[in-house]
Image 1 (spheres, rainbow over the protein chains, first blue to last red):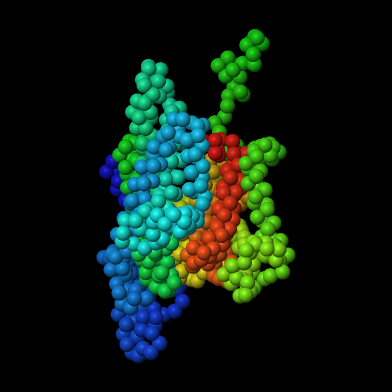
Image 2: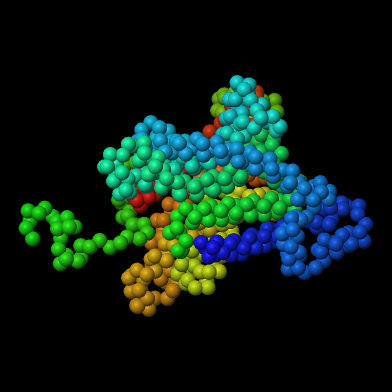
Length: 307
Length: 310
């Protein structure tokens, strides 16, 4: 197991390095001189030169990359162009917890709804519930989340006045974002739970369990669901990734001051260090989610370790 | 053997019938063209999706040509008009003809989707084939690059590229296809890995064929079906990504009408004219649904083991 762990960790490091290099290179391709952007048009050229030396922009590009990397590792992601001199890490510290809160809430909703739905759909294959689950899965994966958000706003806020249109702070303002964000992961969890359950239903030991007269409830819960759980577990990791990416859209639509909206605003404000930071952060998180999922998978299914 | 045994199931056939032993099947079984076409024709849902797509394409091509209005023609005295003879779908908040813009938006979405998938297929084929065929350090190097790009979430990669390099049509296409090719490359590689051990490749090599000839003439035609299926399933998500970028204001820039741009524009008037939001939203959703039904139908027709059955 520990060998597998080391192997997986060693696998992640070069990917992270490559990703940071890619982010760094795209950032350097950005139009405009960062010092010029920071100081504005009226700056003293000597002050600019000093700042350039301080930021290390006069050194060769590979040194700049190492410097960027070293600082990123220590949590220093540079300063914002848009909010003069504000450290990016502070901005991330403000916005990220909100994104995590919305994302995790939607995952709870997605799993709480998707898991039972997937199980029921598999048990009653071909029934109305099954058809509904497949329709939901298809819609959840095919209809863009901002369209879903718009429909929600139109019905729940504009027509029925049940919930506020947007904003952040009161719990009512969180309901629609969490529901909209949950839809895609829920579709995914439902679909994969169903598939995993159906696969296990085909196994010999299920036939044995049934033929020895075990109540169907126990066959489903104890024999099938437990064995399907390994596959279902991996869906939660992917669902979490979906929810975090989806946050970009949902936060922008509902005006939630999280990372997603910060990323979009950074693009409008040409705040390149912020864009880089967001992409780097999300990529790291996604790799982390994948790693944890794979490790859990290996813990639960010993066969995986012997690859 | 007694003929009364009825054709002989596998158990009945003795060890003499070696030729009847089923070969293990790896990868998709290429289905003869006419068979898959017959399957598609039988599948009403796929046909319907295909018809919807054909209609969308026709609209995107014909309407902007036939329309008396350019897509950015403003009629400030005739804003928010209801559908009429002059404006079959009414006008928006600048008095622009909604039908014209909807069709032109279709052009943008379909163009971005089609071009991005094309780039993705080309890069995926080249990388996947080279990686799978040559193996060794070539494989290792290419797959590590693939891993790195694969680690980026599509939407954020697109935000990185269009946000820093600018939101031109070309950048959007490149950003979306760059995020998508690793999956294609992996599929192609896995397929080539299985195929290159087959006898026909050995035979070709025995006859003195060069690596390039083996790849181009023998291997790539065999992955064609798989790539076609993947590509048809990839267009939908790419169109979603483009619409999302445009909706957020960091994709296609106004006044050029992409469906995402139109939805974002109309979103400001959602209380008074929800209709303006719903029309492009419906158009977008229907198109993507049609692509996903069509792709899955095609997948099932080309390779019955894959598809929406389970």
